Amino acid sequence: PKIYKSPFPDVPVHNRSVFTHLFSSTDPSRVGEWPASSLAYVDAPTGTTLTRAQVKSFSLQLARSLQTKLQARRGDTVLIYSQNSLSWPIALFGSVAAGLRCTLANSAYNARELAFQYTDSGAKILYTSEEGIPVVLEMFKGLGLSLEEARQRIIVLTTSLHWAGDAYVPIGKDAKGFTILADLLGHGALAHEEKFDGDLANETVYLCYSSGTTGKPKGVETTHRNITAVIGQVRPVFPKSDSGPDRMLGILPFYHIYGAVKLVHFPLLVGTTVYIMPRFDPIQFLANIQKYKITNSLIVPPVLVVLSRLPQVDEYDLSSLDVLFSGAAPLGAALTKQVKKRLESKRKNGKPLYILQGYGLTETSPTTHLLEKPDCIRKIGSTGILLPNLEARLVIDGEGEGNIDAEEGQPGELWIRGPSVMKGYHNNPSATKDSITHDGWFKTGDIAIRDPEGFYSIVDRRKELIKYKGFQVPPAELESVLLTHPEIADTAVIGVDSAKEATELPRAYVVPGRPELLKTEGQKAAFAKGVQKWIESKVARHKFLRGGVVVIDAIPKSAAGKILRRELREAAKKE
Ligand code: AYL
Image 1: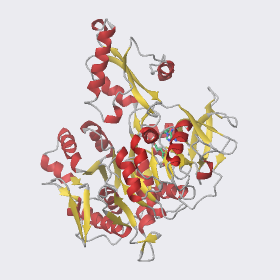
Image 2: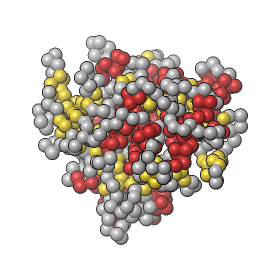
Image 3: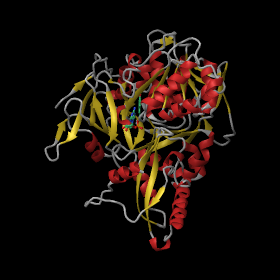
Image 4: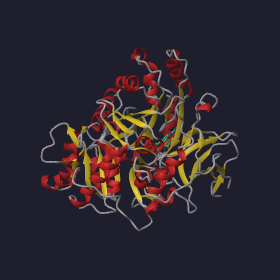
């Protein structure tokens, strides 16, 4: 095979747990490499801060209560269901310090979606924000638990809190009758994280959900080594600002591996402060950049659309901004240029704005490729170079002759090997076997081209996955929901491109159960609208059928009964 190696020298891969790697130090005035009093996270709306020492201390306090009050044991799984907040990293690192694995759920999930992940991951304890309580209670009710039983499993992450002297004071809506995070702090602390005498580095620490190349979401087993490796691999390549320490604006959701690694873990390693926003809001985004003199932010392509159009962009001083880093979906060169020009033209300091790109997957923890500052114009549109310690192949299907490596410069399916590739899919050996070869190559399902200088571009997707604004929308899941509609006989879901919003939009093709009732175009359109509305009561927002519902006579399928998505996609492109 034709194996491409990273042009960067390998970085050391440690045999350590996530908690020890990030928080231990021989110097008591430091947490990891950084001063204990340095700010780790700041709540952007209120300005409340958490130092590195506080994150470590609160985590060890929580870890103790998880063990003594909630009887959590090493290997147990906890689920985090909350938008970003200062409490979020404490919940995560406290659980990790107690030896638990964390499964991270989309905070927009409804009770059905949450129940799937809670059950599939084998979680017991569940963290939720106040807003999430009704959904969580509905879920537990559906699982047959009494209110009392449900309460014993819930920890409420009050969304705002402040630090007053020695006390951690939550402010927030009423969560009476529930254990809140603050109740579990201040009852002593573990002296160090829970010990383990097994192969800790190879133990699963996180379970994010991804549909992979096909089917429904699956738990991705991310190990301690995956995480400590990937943050080390990113470190030498990730852009730094020229003007001193970076201040990062955190808008990506922490429950997605992109946010969890780049906003929660990586900043602790490299000494950055993260200004946390509960969710993306365009005006707050601009206001916070100005207020906190933000130097960089990780985004998804639709954020650039907002920055290219929003009139208020001109009202804020964004001159501190050094880097906007896009990932999770394709980013066009034209949009990149437009935003760069608009933001730079307003600057009096003449500083360039770097709009960079990265690529990765939940299964690769996630980043595998990054574009560096000096290449931002020269290689615009490229997702960058392979990170240290990684190897890549570009493979084409040899039609019966097995897998053949593409010629140099030709497209092929990107395969990745290295220490940041997941252990496998949780409880799903067959999906694991389909996606990781016996010699450790992970098949991404993306089609890429590598130029002679080693820059990769993603040109197509082989897998059925749809991406709405960076969020995964597994068509198989929407199809199974649609098939529960009494008037739908068959269905297929694909993504259609929206250049305007820089995203794909999920679209359903549906075969009506009683076609004789839909004779006129008007009747069909009304039926389609009805289905589009109906799905909104069944799934989280990012899965809404924004690309429309199309009534057709039959779904194109192969002889084996597989949906021919490519045919539908090609037809949609011609519209
Ligand atoms: P998942 N260009 C095109 N497609 C992309 C890109 C990109 N830059 N990044 C991700 N994708 C698609 O698991 C691709 O189809 O992880 C890939 O298989 O939600 C799929 O998204 C994976 O989706 C970074 C930059 C992480 C990006 C990421 C993406 C994590 C998304 C770290 O630095």
